[in-house]
Image (tube, rainbow, N blue to C red; front, side, top):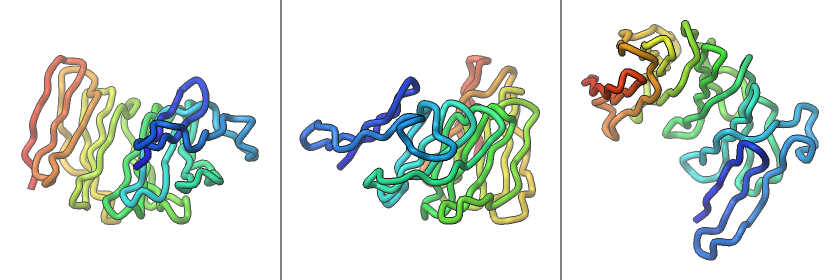
Length: 193
């Protein structure tokens, strides 16, 4: 078992949980040796099969890296800071969200967009894929939660509302409920079928 810890001010370290010792240190910007080096790391997320890491940097992109931390993918780009990522259950797609007012679903093998960017009226603070596929929820600073069809049509579902910016979204394990919370000091539980 391994634990990856991202540091916004610098690199990321992968630890062996059995020994607590560092196994690998992921490079920061200039150390990465890429044409467009990352600038610090904001978040890190293991793929469901544990073979890859998704890392978001402090500025404009996410990167994919194999478990042996030997290389970086080309940037999965946004126009502003990328706040986080979420893998599909199969690990074939990666969801990213950003202060650029978009959530983006990427093909994790090719690094290309799987759908056009899902646009919002403000920064996307959080997003989550339904564990049974087909939908994602995105939390926006404009006080809305948007539901998006990920099967190719990108048909937006209903818009859910808070009285202030929405900070978090999370699906239940069975995908039937969506929990949202926001700056309005309110958590709301939505039923989904």
